[in-house]
Length: 192
Image (cartoon, rainbow, N blue to C red; front, top):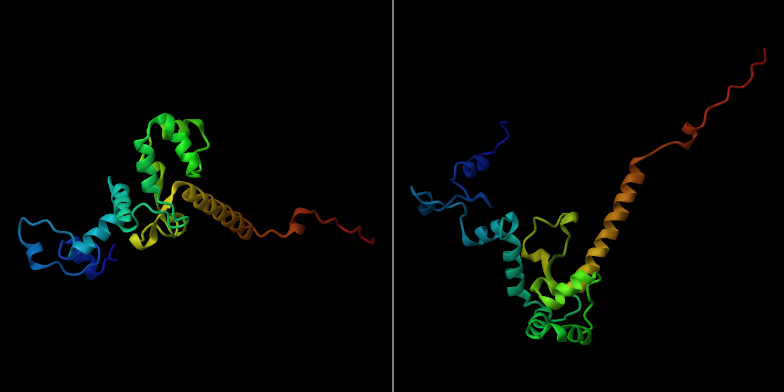
């Protein structure tokens, strides 16, 4: 209460861009015109970072436009592999994946899904370079990269390890106990 800046008030009153707080162009302020952004660039950044119902689809689409489904770690063309596997009959898919040195899913259910009904998401992921759990969630496309699913699984496991270590060290450093406090002091016998 009472903490809003002039810039905040202009955004709340529909006079400024909800992304960058720059004044909206005159045309956007006309009666009957609904405009929340000052430019197409702000609109894209806002929609990408804000999320929404189709945000992951939009993000994947934009990352694909930049990197064409090529893993930025191992350089495998995961999208081409997806297209090739999808064109094969289910009985031929396992052999083709093994010939491509693809790391297969560990669960039999996931493997059966991959062989029976391969999906693009089985082959490549839009990955946050700086993980969401480490503060990378509000970044734009500059923090995203294409990873094939096996490389993404490795990166996810590395993240889990980092977080586990960090949580363990946070717990250890926040608890400072003098071990002497766990022992009762014996009273010395009096010399009376």
